[in-house]
Length: 77
Image 1 (tube, rainbow, N blue to C red):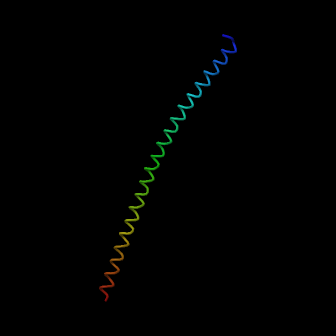
Image 2: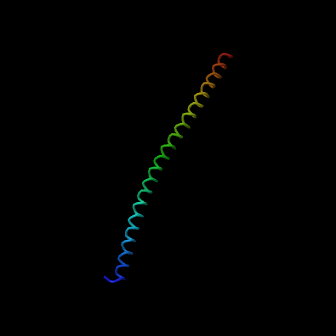
């Protein structure tokens, strides 16, 4: 084998190893990003649930106040 063919073979091997390494790195990075997306969705869902519970409690309090006000008006008449 000539010196030039050995160099080109070595460069081809190094390029192949580099490409394979990059593909594996990119695949694991993408998988991690997908998992983080799921975690963010779960957190967002929990936040919305907490907000809905808070709004429901506020509405319940307003309903009680309204019923008290109606009861007082009925007693006054």
